[in-house]
Length: 150
Image (tube, rainbow, N blue to C red; front, top):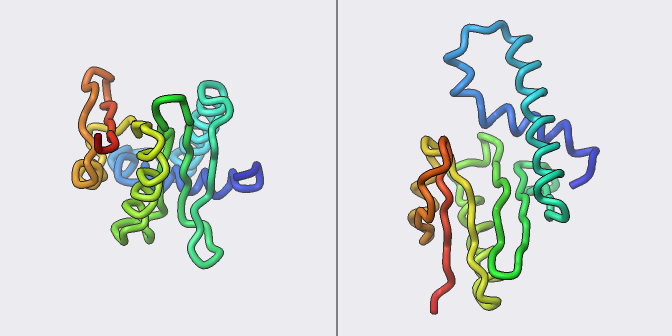
């Protein structure tokens, strides 16, 4: 990922908030301004708190369809963010990315962790792939963990 990808990641971010903002009676322009501000704040937060993270744009046939941000520590790989555009969701792309990550982390004995919103529909995918809730006391998010087989 480079700064040239920020317009795409802003659109991707907005796509993850569509259902939530549908309930808010703001004009479209206000929603768009809010989403741009929230994306900028999220990007700044990630840059500050996950220095050295690997930020990748996911492409299919040369077209950007998502993002995957990873932060590696000695005993774990933290998924800082994994998001797909609506048209790429539910097609196995996320599961394939996670399985590839497990194949990389497992032999090195690293756990994989991710913060997941309590109402995120991807929770069923994480459960199916072997993630377990590690910490439920984080407000709107739970900390989930996948462990390699012993």
